Image (cartoon, rainbow, N blue to C red; front, side, top):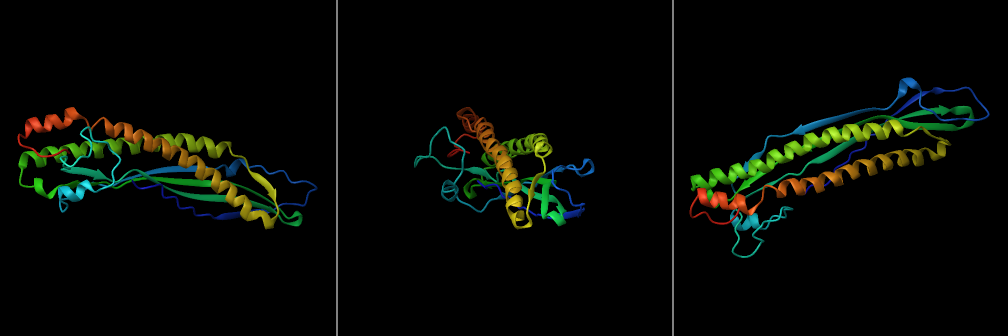
Length: 232
């Protein structure tokens, strides 16, 4: 499976130098509240016919076959391309220059939920119209399941990350020498929160995909395509 790919792009908007005061209290201006955008990028599945059954059997996949993985089990098809996230984060920074005090908070968070599936069909089944059709249909069930999963977690991310960034106050005051510490703290907190959602997505995905790879499904195809070899 593909793991979470997170890209953090940090920019700072200098909101201006405030008048010197005896004490700095960091707060987020009403017109500078954080914003969130969660995008969805789902590519059309590509189909690869170049691999043999033996090659497909060597693929590292997370689904569990009801028939196990013994020497008499053949793989006629599989789907690869898990859901992944890409995150871009911007931070606001306000500087009280005369006091060497600085406050930081989230400016915006952009998350893209990505899915780019590839369906692999064993080279040996291309001449069997029935098996080819049914294995392809079966694999598209996996693709459709991942599509729905990505759409569901787009909404989950929108809800949970919106709540997180709105509830995270401005941090500081920090000296200019501590600026990197402040940046790292905000980024790491967001990273932790997004990864927690991603872990739930992976667990949910395994459960949903397992509902497709059942003995009943394989027996249905065997009944439709007598003489079919292996599993899907």
